Amino acid sequence: MSKVQVTDVILRDAHQSLIATRMRTEDMLPICDKLDAVGFWSLEVWGGATFDACVRFLKEDPWERLRALRKALPNTRLQMLLRGQNLLGYRHYADDVVEAFVAKAAENGIDVFRVFDALNDLRNLETAIKAVKKAGKHAQGTICYTTSPVHTLELFVEQAQALKDMGADSIAIKDMAGLLTPYATYDLVKAIKANVDLPLFVHSHSTAGLAPLCQLKAIEAGAEHIDTAISSFASGTSHPATESQVAALKGTQWDTGLDLELLTEIADYFKEVRKKYHQFESEFTKEDVSVQINQVPGGMMSNLANQLKEQHALDRIREVFAEIPRVREDLGFPPLVTPTSQIVGTQAVLNVLAGERYKTITNEVKRYLQGGYGQPPAAVNPAVRTKAIGSEQPIEGRPADGLGAEMARLRKDIGALAKSEEDVLTYAMFQDIGKQFLEQREAGTLVPEALEPIAVAGSAKASASVSTEFSIDVHGETYQVEITGIGGDSAGKRHIYLTLDGMPEEVLIESLNEYDAGSSAGGKRAKASGPGDITTAMPGNIVDVLVNVGDEVAAGQAVLITEAMKMETEIQAPIAGKVAGVYVAKGDRVTPGETLVEIVPH
Ligand code: MN
Image 1 (tube, protein in one colour):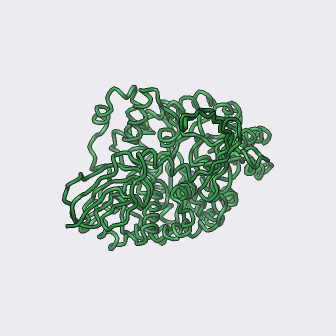
Image 2 (cartoon, rainbow, N blue to C red):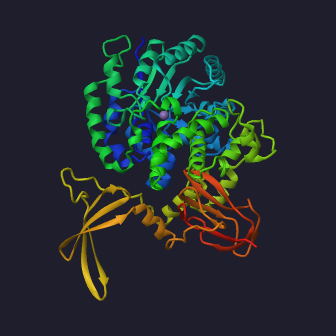
């Protein structure tokens, strides 16, 4: 039997790659009976960035999502993507957290664990794979595909063999950036199949438009499994379309046997769902062969585009793309996938926006250069390392070996806010936003981020379908206001259409994001102009304020810690002096150009 088996990623990677991971459970459940009837080998439904997006933006309990999907998909294997020792967070967790997380994921419904490490440092997969085996589930050992002088066929075969020795039930080639080319795929699959006797999965993004061709060559070379996405969320930075691949193999020895008509019904459903999330669409999710040069994976491209758009610097995205391979080489050619994609991407953004390379270095880059993520695939740039960590010696052991057990402390920290072990794990993944989520749940104040209304086709004026009514008092007069529409974003400005006591009016508002940022911080801060005015290079949140008014600070001393694009950055004092003003508090949203801390030189 040489039938090809299909894993559909519509409920995880497809929307992660195209609409910043925003699909809500309410849009998944109604179609589950049909998805369950298709006969997919598995459905990828959980992990990756979905856990973060649930807690951070959608205010959904990710564990509840998993249980709901398990119930709605009783006949299909459920699969998740797990970042080895990083689980679904962005740091290395102690082994007891990894063990607890895998056990709970299995208990709540995951059958197949695709486990990877961003650096392909296989020591970071050991604990997770052991835990999956212990839970009696399918452990899929993953190789992150990338190209560099050190990433040879021999190395990938060696890694596949090591994963088998570790107990993996199958091997996945994870081509997150769409770097594979059809003939490179053929050679890679042939080499692995010749040496390692395990089922082989090919997960490739269509970023360069090549993934459908790569999968065909992979199948010819002996791969038994392909990852696809229902067509309405396929192609570009997502995956080959399920229906197309099923049609391509029909009548051949590899015929998937899946029902094209049923798949089309599912595609029609998701076509409508996708409209709801139009605000997260990005032009950078379309097919673009330049990925073969800059190696930026799909999810990262749409995230970078969103981040740059937020700070009105979208026009610099090409510069950022050009900087990414330079940073990657400095860091010893890590494959670009979470968290290394964020580490490299954020540093590249800083290098471009600050106008000077490595003027600001994120804490994560420092940790990476200390060996905190594992062994980089190749030697790092010694000048960058010295700039980041001085003469400190990087650790050589497995990063988690330096971590003591954490679960007891986490359980104690979060206390009664956690109603279950799952809640403790949510807190473990994201200490700040996880805790905030549990607090809001307790207070009954969880509110998902707002979705922009769907534009009404053919209406040039009022493009929103919502209507909000309220009254305002101005100079002793009361006016009835009804918002009848919100226009699209043009050059950072938006038209708001309303009626004032029944009379149609039109208001032009500068970026709503900026308005939100200003208001949440209690009014705009002064523009940074003097040498002691400290600002941020990127919009983000204040994680910590390290100085008080009156403090003496040295030049280069850390005064603030900010978080942007999930990466923490230390902001240092540009000059020595006395702190004359602190205009931020923990949790504030800040934008470049504002004075956050003011230092007066002596
Ligand atoms: Mn992927």
